[in-house]
Amino acid sequence: MLVTIDALLGAEELARARTVLAAAPWCDGKATAGHQSAQVKRNRQLLEDCAESQELGRMVLGALGRSALFITAVLPLRVFPPLFNRYDPGMDFGAHVDNAMRQVRASGDTIRTDVSCTLFLSDPGSYDGGELVVQDTYGEQRVKLPAGSAMVYPATSLHRVEPVTRGSRIASFFWIQSMVRDDTRRRLLFDLDMAINGLRGDVPTQHPSPVALTGVYHNLLRQWADA
Image (cartoon, rainbow, N blue to C red; front, top):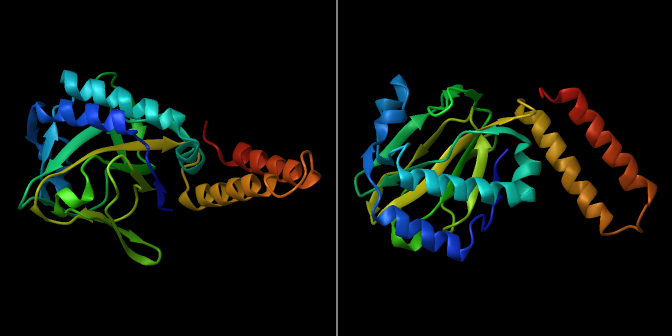
């Protein structure tokens, strides 16, 4: 399931992020790649433990916590600390699947990567190429979102970043361990929750149908959740 989260970061947050990133220390992106991914990964990455990464990571986590759409789509249990990458002309990331498990350097905790997220930080008109291409049930989905918007998609998906031919594509990326590890079940819960929310606007308050469907939602979540 691919879900777009529009305007996850506001204008002031984006401005601050760009100021911080302009003077940030970048290193070879292969530093966080697995053996297979490292062979097709050509980009730059912000050092994980630098002050800039820590500040921006807190900003992104705060925005995620305020996003009802992110929470209902992902059902987050744990979020890997956000990372930041940069693609300049000639850089790309070939087709790969994300590692199943990631260890948080600061704490040593291990996170199962059920869901991947890319948060775009560059205006799409400022660079050419750089599309995130995700292999979905219905074929390839090409994603290039406005700055501040994010895409969540199953970490099991084969995906790539197309070569950048002009400008710089800067983004945050990270993974989420969901309370519900199965993508099909998360999709069903998401569709049910969105339908319930839509129904609430069309029927009188305390109508029995939304109440009953909400009960179904929570009973399914109770049955399927790992937490």
